[in-house]
Image (tube, rainbow, N blue to C red; front, side, top):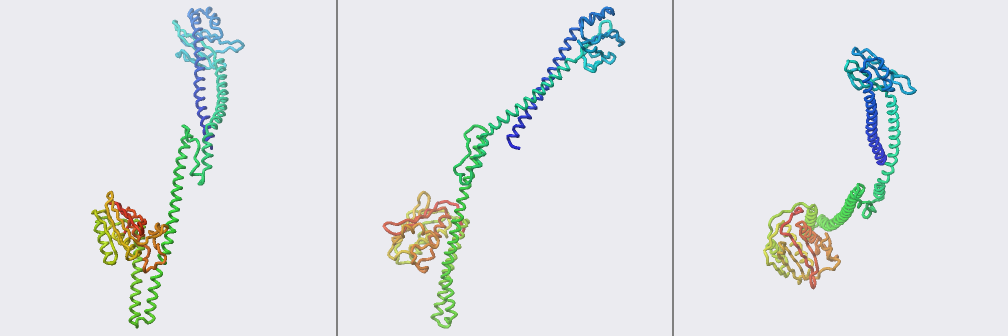
Length: 469
């Protein structure tokens, strides 16, 4: 059943219930009023009738029909014996009497069944001499009037119900027109139209306007959810693409040391065990390639752990001492390189000392690997608004603009001519960037002027670690 039908039915039921109450009250009031009029007429006829009845003379009683024309009159003795009876007679009607022996003489006003089967209204009084005077009026006209009234009420009520139902259907159709407009607008909305199309009528201060506002709010949330879903799908696709590329790069990186190890093993099996020079070469090559594979696997494992956002260790780290230790270690490895250090503040932050040292070592190692011997490495550490800012720059040849944004990509090498022996695995800066981000910090690579590369690292003093070592 549609809403319009339910509203029409509900209106009809409510109207019918109201009509029943009104008709009942009207019928009761009218019938009561008519009965009161009959009682008043009986009371008016009672006084002259009582005067004649009190004379006690039967010859005088014959005058009673003249003072109470058309009414039923009975004079009853004290023992209940009828002494005088006058039937009620209406023009053109049969005389109507009442069986006085069945009347309850103790009730002054009452309605009984007359001899013709119709009702009669009685007024009963006890006289001074003990006789009882009964005056009655048939209710034929009252009954007919009540029936006519009932017919009129039923007919009028039926017409009123039909009229109200027709009017209600018309008004409800008009009232629901904005709702149908809302329905049409909502049905026309699809994924393509979701960002722009909204339900009309939201500015109206009505229930339909409230519904339109609610639907528009729901559509806004759906649009936001759709955008988030699209972003999530795009991120998942991007993540999947990165994962595929990562696996491909990792497989490519591992292929060379695995092949080299296999080649050295074949050299050993082909007779190198009996030749001291070839034996040393095979064992040395296997050891070097194994170490390269172990380092590569370790780097890949670290990156996978950082990607899982597991908690890092969190303790107070003296960044000043950490940087100085890293520079001392680099000087021992490359005593011919020039290092300049600008550390004026004692900088302490919360973090993982092992991973933060790895960040500094990786950046410095990148400088030492990819710049000529005469290029200098400059390190500066300052406290900037309670954050540690570490800057590592070099005076090497630098990189091209299109390569700058890709230096933190995994397995990326700015110089494609570099070999894995001289160029590394391409994971150094990527690992450093992942560790810095896990400390809620930032790493930015820019050109150094007039040439070279600058790496700026900002680490907050307090942070919530999000990745595992």
